Length: 175
Image 1 (cartoon, rainbow, N blue to C red):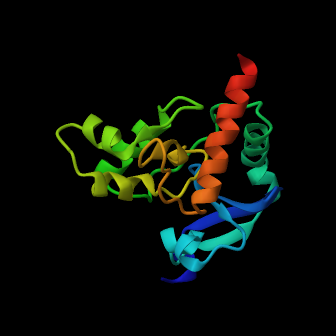
Image 2: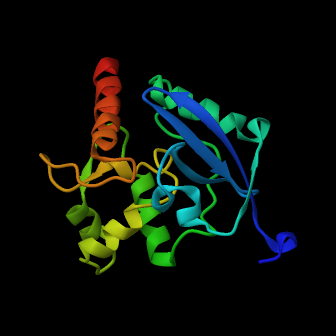
């Protein structure tokens, strides 16, 4: 793809222990969240190959701020725009919209999510859609295998469990 036709993404990093998160946006909104040192399959290039990346902390400031507020327990939902235009099929986007509606501090199973889709019971198809590029902002960590097993997560099962416990902790502290 010629450089003049390449889609431009902007990125920045934010350190929130134990990770250094990479946040990437397009002109339409958030396109990707991952860790700075992730492998190529779970990096921005795994979701969006052949894109031009430009570091721009000013453009990313609202996203970084909201992520910091989330980890500090001051934010339960995100208000920054998310770019769905380059990710997935209409079915995958339907699943992502459902994931966005899972309440803070709660979890549902892949089976329950698959059952909630119009006529679909394909857990595997749903699980593929759950693996979206905009982790945390689209709270796919709230979708689990079973009450005693969280299941896979692009940043690892430990991170998924940490996010679930973080939300439960802040939710319980507010009671």
